[in-house]
Amino acid sequence: MAPSAMSRWTKALSEAQPVPYWLDDPGRPHPEPALTGAETCDLLVVGGGYSGLWTALNAKERDPQRDVVLLEGREVGWAASGRNGGFCAASLTHGLPNGLARWPDEIVKLQELGARNLDEIEKAVARHDLDCEFERTGEIDVATETYQAWELRDWYEELREKGLADGIDFLDADAVREQVASPTFEAGLWDRRGVAMLNPAKLVWGLKRACLGLGVRVYENTPALELKSYGAGMAVRTPYGTVRARKVALGTNIFPNLVKRVRAYTVPVYDYALMTEPLSEEQLAAVGWKNRQGLGDSANQFHYFRLSADNRILWGGYDAVYSYGGRVRAEYDDRPETYAKLAGHFFTCFPQLEGVRFTHAWGGAIDTCSRFSAFYGTAHQGKVAYAAGYTGLGVGATRFGADVMLDLLAGERTERTSLEMVRKKPLPFPPEPFAWTGIALTKWSLARADSHGGRRNLWLRTMDKFGLGFDS
Image (cartoon, rainbow, N blue to C red):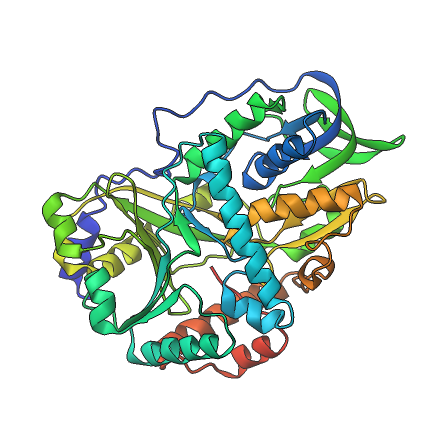
């Protein structure tokens, strides 16, 4: 990259605020008071992101008389639920390729359940008046290299043969550029119904409001410190009090699970994004994008990008950063070297937008597991349930995970709890230094594959064989 180009591209970052765009909103609600003293309830939900909020909401909708308390360590949605790209996908398996490779015998059912889950999210948005800029525009997976275009066409033909191509269209170079004008696009697969765009922070805040309206008692700035059995139920200690509950649902995701044996199944991977200023009518016309789909490219180190309600472009992905020891720290949320890289990639994709400025640049941790999609389980003789490991596609899948946790806590065998995906767990990550070494080698190998026509080396082929990997 020439120094002049770098200077030109990074100049667009000169006024970018290092805070998540979605959370930088004057309409952000005030937090609920912290818990002080003792509480009792039927169901205690730990975690105020999507996992916890959907669990609390669905629990009250299943049984309005159920007494539900939710604890959040800071403010609802401050972590991954308020920092993501706002892609709400039907997929429960981190994409159809991953699901087909891991659960081929269940993939039709998993697709049906995922589509139904997205429909239920859309209904909940309407039922509870969740003002979250929900747009069911679909998503285009774009090829930016010739080999990727051939792979997309082959994948589309495979989907047609397996009867899984309903609602999916293959777009050649002219067709995909007619949708969104980039000189880098060689082909695309448009999933017309399987993905919605939304404002992730407004979804969190709307879910919180809906929970409060149904009688859920929400306590913010109340971290859960310890979980232990207490008589016939469970007790959770907080800084200023305790909660005794018959059942507990854990939606803490990347943060240390209160069931310690679960911690080895996830590692924190940091992902980063930029947000532009609102595009002018002329700039929008230069890009096209009239159908407002979400987009993601087909590389191993991929980008995701979309239009916001006020016609900004969110541009994120590519770097997936793991720090030795799997630490989650506030200083990792800001990474200027990644922002500079992303800015260069943005203007390569959209050279017609040169001169556009970025207003926000931020990062956050993703709870990654070795199979890239959520896993589930129970502890303490079925009195505690957990779900984690969504690996970046949790905006939609967390609602399904909430229903799985509620099914497990009820001791019910349902079509959800009968799934192999629910009954079995991924392989745990090894201890350090093996985790860091393996992840670093995998990242290097993925970058090498992107620069060598997609050819996967021995390390990646071995990881594929054992169902392991590393993804953002």
